[in-house]
Amino acid sequence: MTSLSDIRIAIVDDEPSIVTMLQMVLRREGFNQLYAASTCAEALDLAARVVPDIILLDIMLPDGSGLELCSKLREYGNPHILFLTAKASDLDVLRGFAMGGDDYITKPFNPLEVAARIQARIRRLEPDVPAASPVKRPDSGIYRFGRFTVNEAEGELIVEGQPVPCPAQVFQLLLHFCKHPGIVFTKTQLYDKVWGINGQGDDSTVMVHIRRIRERIEIDPGNPQLLITVRGLGYKLMKESQDR
Image (cartoon, rainbow, N blue to C red; front, side, top):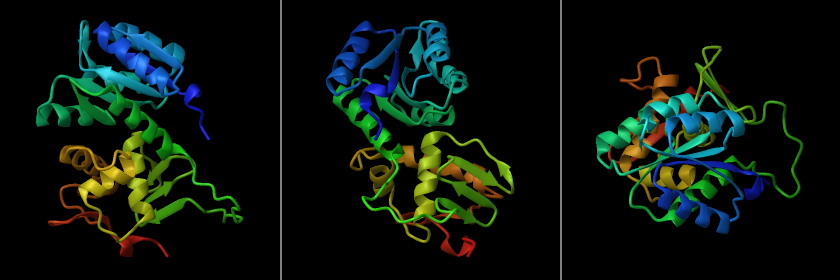
């Protein structure tokens, strides 16, 4: 099991009071490797040196936008990026996800919620190992659905034989659907099961991630045939598309 003390967290924010508050709460929760940057330039230098696992990223920074910085930070590993911002409109949230963010919290916020979301993210990355594990088949953890394949162990999405880059949270959501084909999940259920925050999240979070999945696996994302919307209920991955 991953130790919280091994998780590297970078806090990118130009408000010292927020940085201090987050560091205090995260240390109390068991996170020891905490780093801070107050500008885009400092954040890029920090990412190159430390390669953080988690990045708490403000959108409004003195020397640029955290939205534009987000894609540059992904050049250093595959961090889980959680936006912290006073920009709270639906458009701002959608832009944050579109630019590569994995999660979004608006200011003012409860720092304990930030810690809870980070811990939920870590739990989602932990493998489920039963006490007496049977011998697994060589293809265990590989899910094939017609034109695309998901390899859980390698964190890889293959579409028509070609690897397709997939942000961590998008991959986790797709993996959840692959493990439960044919089952309809509401937005609240998905937020609970994939983000792990007991259903506490706005509709746009799931909606944007669904769209990002469709952009990768569907022939026509605007007319999805694999990951469909069940009107009034939620979303499901079509079971009959799975290779037998």
